[in-house]
Each structure stands twice: as C-alpha cells, then as structure tokens.
Image 1: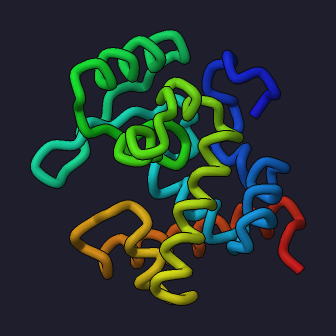
Image 2: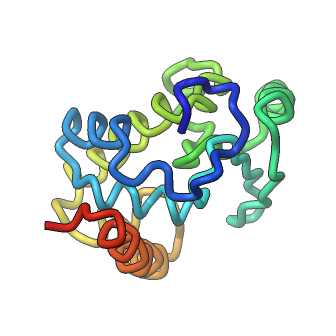
Image 3: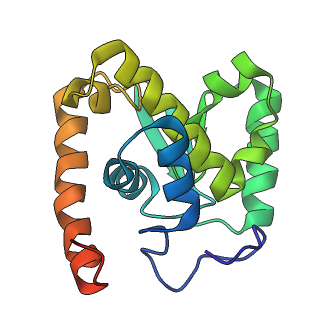
Length: 168
C-alpha cells in the first residue's frame, strides 16, 4: 500500500504480503506474519477501507468504498452506536469503544494491522497458539469455520509468497 492512507485500493490485491506494517505488528505482538496476512485476506481481501455492519451475528459489507466514503460511513455508524468492523483486518467497534478511540483511525492500514496483532495476541494468551485462538479473532460463533477460512487463506497466500520468492 502506498504510504498515503488517502490512496484508493492499491492495484496489487496482495500488497500486504510481507509489507513492513504486517511484519512490524507481528514482531511487536509476537504473532506469526503469515497468520496475520491470512486474517487480512479473510477479513477484507486487503481492502483498507472495508466496513461491515454487524446484525444478528452476520456482517453486512459496505462498499467498495473510497477513503472519504469510508470515513463518512464510520463516523455515522459510530454516532448511532452500531456494531461494525473497520479496515483491512476488520477491527470491531467494541474495541474502539472500550479504548475510546475514534474509529476513523482504523482506516489507516498500519494502525489497523497493529490492532489486529494486538487482538490476536490477546486470543493467543487466552487459548495458547492454537486454531481456537485464531478462530476467536473475529468473535465468530463458528470458531472452527473461521479457523478453516484462515487455514485456506494461508494456503492461498503461500502461492503468492512462492511467486514473489518469499518462501524459504
């Protein structure tokens, strides 16, 4: 992703693979880079402006959105007290309310990825380094189903990493 958060969707859908923001967040919170990348693929397919509104346990994806549209939507959802997910790793508004953080900040992909690593670390601390911890990342009731989505994303991203010469 270009350094500018105001940029539209990057032409490379997998721009986040081995990106310095992902690596830094993974290192800071001692989580696996590849799991973090797979969560990004599952949550937003790399869209830094993704916004989902949660109702009845399901997300309603809005978009694709420009940064300007995403900011306006997030501000409106925040004001109405809605339950929603923001950004590349779909950080939930529960975290924003708990830590009193304006949700617009989570449209910055690097900030969002740092929070994703933080949330994942919390789950790992609670459930150890297991697929249950991964499955609990997004608060899904279907822990096994979400874990399998992340596992399949890992396989898909392995091909991208191989094509880019990133696999050892």
